[in-house]
Length: 414
Image 1: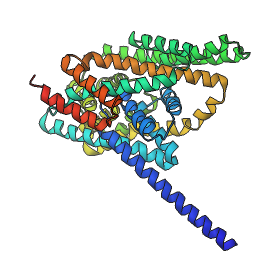
Image 2: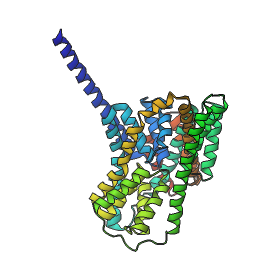
Image 3: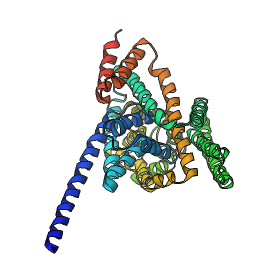
Image 4: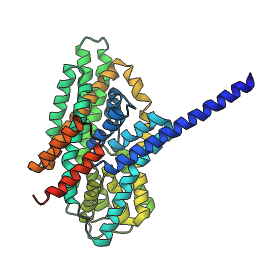
């Protein structure tokens, strides 16, 4: 009997290992692919993940995915990278957390390193404008599709829809993203209070703390932006040598405190690299940011380019590791908490409101991107074709992007 039980346990353990390896291979394949095709910034990356993880593979429900999007927006670090890490952790535990995050980051880091090498070697950026001109309308179509799907799941009630509209309007008018999210969450708890809950005092205290935190973050970002504008003309005339230790510490600090969009990252880099340390010139920084924008994957791969410019391949490696490392720890701490938040009425109300607020921020980003990506009839036509093919025929986003890029090349002479 004992022998039979031991054999059963051995078979069971072997089956578990095979299942884990299968899941890790699936995660690696998916996020390597996404790391190579995810143009367009965090909103587009999250839209691609929703398509693959929720719609096609059904690894997560749309509601669970929304909870993670909302929670990720409230912690420092690159949102899309942290979403990849969340999915990996849920799918395959600690190994999945590492595999998904690394596989999403590595393609962008390698491509950015190649561009940085060309920049140092030739003194200018490789030309890819026609291809990117066709890609951008497809990105708009992908975000629009994800907003439609996630919005239907997030707008559970009329009050939540109103909160989403308010957050989108605030974001379009220039309000800080984190402050908008926090105020949206507070609005959700406020509605619960007005609905007749007996825990009004407790909710009021929580709301006050969150409101103060939002104001603090808003003030910090405003101060950084103002400092950047005030010192933009003080650029160093040339880059200076920097040790790998100092480089790593600089980007580790940024990865630990960075909230908001890639434009906030530019403020941090301007204040530190150009003004304070004089490691880069203003032009070098702008070129590094441009490389981070035109390559797929996380915009924070700008750090890879900066590291290469300052210290070659070793600098690129150190800067990349340093800026992304905090995200792995943040997600590991946050992920187990999210399901527990759902069990608290107040936390659930806050999370529901943050979820619709996160979708509203995607709407604001969509509007802002569409202003430049859909500049003429060619952009509108490519976007319309991508929306129809994506929603009606469920064409894979990879082929949509390839088709958009080819149309960009075809239309360049029109």
